[in-house]
Length: 66
Image (tube, rainbow, N blue to C red):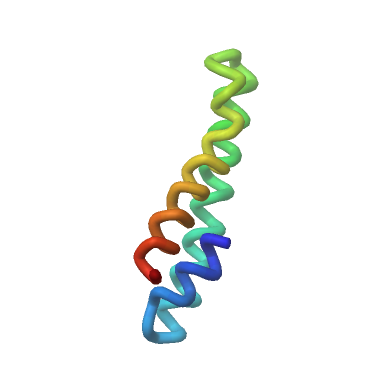
């Protein structure tokens, strides 16, 4: 959902594409980081970090497009 909202919020197609690619890359980085932190028993709740972050980002982008 956040990828669609980011794509809609950027005016030019090239910037929208680059934003969505960077969004996917950022999700992958947060996903692997949170998996490693949960693996070493820092906190098992950190496994939900990417979902919470991108849910907040989608909420902010949806409010901005309102």
